[in-house]
Amino acid sequence: MRWLTCLKCDSTMKQISLFAPSMRGGGAERVMVALATELSRQGMKVDLVLAKAEGPYLEDVPASVNVVDLNASRIAFALPALNRYLNSTKPDCLLSTLRHANIIAILAKLVSKHRFVLGVREANTIKAHLENDQSTKERILPFLMKCFYNRADVVIAVSNDVKSDLMSCIKMQGDNIVVINNPVVSDAFYELSEASTGHPWLDEKSEPVVLSVGRLTRQKDFASLIRAFSDYRKSHSARLIILGEGEERASLEGLVAELGLTDFVSLPGFVSNPFCFMKQSDVFVLSSLWEGQPNALIQALALGVPVISTDCPGGSRDILKAGKYGTLVPVNSPETLTLALRDVLATKADPVRPRTDTARTYCRLEFGIQPVANQYLNALTGL
Image (cartoon, rainbow, N blue to C red; front, side):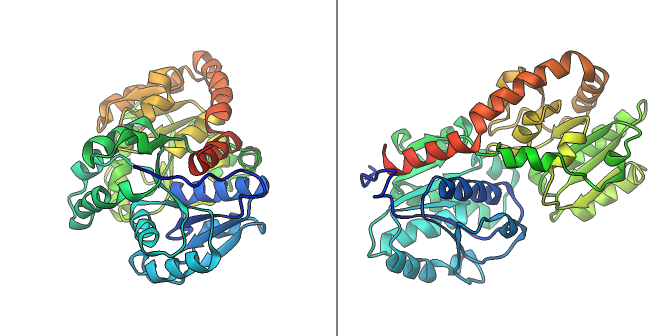
């Protein structure tokens, strides 16, 4: 059973602290920056507590948010410094994200002399992750989650799929889990989307551009997207841009070369502003094997870009309202993805565009930073 100190969103709310491993490029880190920014704007005193204060998203943290560097070489070594921070600063609430950091945050709560409300944010499905990653480290984490997650005051799941996984895989009680969407749509997001990409395929477009965004990892299954794009190019003119960095870069570059696509596929790496790329692309594709709640899919929708997504565990179906706002295809099916590319690009003007106009309004309401930040406040304060 959880306990919640009765806190109010006024003068008695002294401080909210957000805990993450770092500010390296990723959806979870971007969400924490967005929450810190909005909560600070609402008058809260906000600390962004990082195991290691590094990464490109540090540049996006406003001056009103205090960055605390625990200076730990690894997240597992951050516990002593986090405990000292909690006992000295005495925040009212601590919100953590990413599984390793969540475990450390719960341990800190158990040993800290200071009593505070702890929320942990779970952003990925467990079952699909384990089915696709058999490493010892990833297999140990669900065991640790089962031991410790019930010690948090509230667990925030980013989608109904994530909540279901928490209940079935680590036997959590549903009344300790709150589903809250990711806060990824804001005025600043729309302003950034108007910038120049600096990429000639978009700034000087001569043929349709397919875009995808994410870490270059097995989870994102960019290999299937590249194969689907290769088949599409056999009868249509187009180019593919994949933004992101990761351990599968070499294998993906090898596949691009093997398929003779070197002049038609671009992997620029991580970019701090992917939104202008989205705005200028002709279709956005999410090819993942599993997700939690894919931020990039939401952001592309919010910009009015036609989208194609795998019907993977973790929120895509919910986001697209079972196909109302975009095209769903089976996981790991390049052939079906090729057909979807043909359909969407062939009908880009009609009827896809009217559908995306409605999607923009939907995204502002469901994934806007202000309403989502208020839901986080309610979850953490028991209001």
